[in-house]
Image 1 (cartoon, helix red, strand yellow):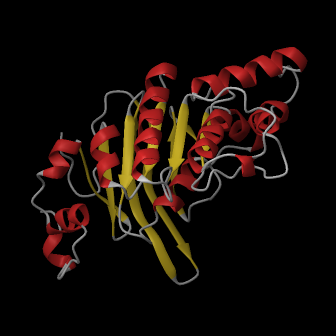
Image 2 (cartoon, rainbow, N blue to C red):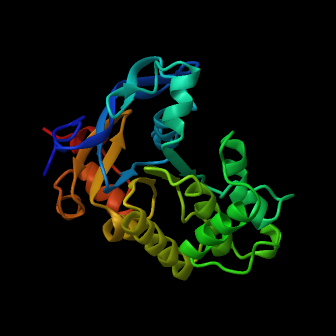
Length: 267
């Protein structure tokens, strides 16, 4: 599949629809009409140069930012225009792994993973049930026996795994990953990529991944969306991305400077 400039995709079963999303911070226009669909149960990777608004887009998807124009729909329900109760209901469908893991340094691994469960309100597991849930989630990401450790006692890769265990603690339908392999060596990077794929397969979740790691793109993506100049330049399969004739695309894949940005526009 290949979508035109700004293409929103042709997925038969989209779980997330982003429509004409605009966002500026003061005089700086970041998103300039983003249209994109995220298909259910697959891995969509979003790429683009630094400053193109990838993390800004992710924060709109999960409702942490409000657009100047446009909206985000989750199964047809507007995250953008939902009231507090409706937004909370939508947020329960999401898990998020932040760029640096965002673990609480003062908490044990157990308390980090248990945090979203405890915050979820009445009816949440407590006591032995909570302890078993935390053990199960840590086992899912390949960690056992670390419940009493603090994040400072773990390696970078282990912290990423704890952060993912926390992200899936409430069994979300959608997981967002913001630069999950930043700062990791190649071995740990590969391990995190495998973790993303295994989590998608085991839990049957929809995954949205922001990354600059092109090897990861070709290893984990079902679909790749590229942001350029505040819009979705294209949405294609990894194979189509690799062979795409656009100078913009090829310069990004191979890490080459783009001499003339206008020359790379799709037609």
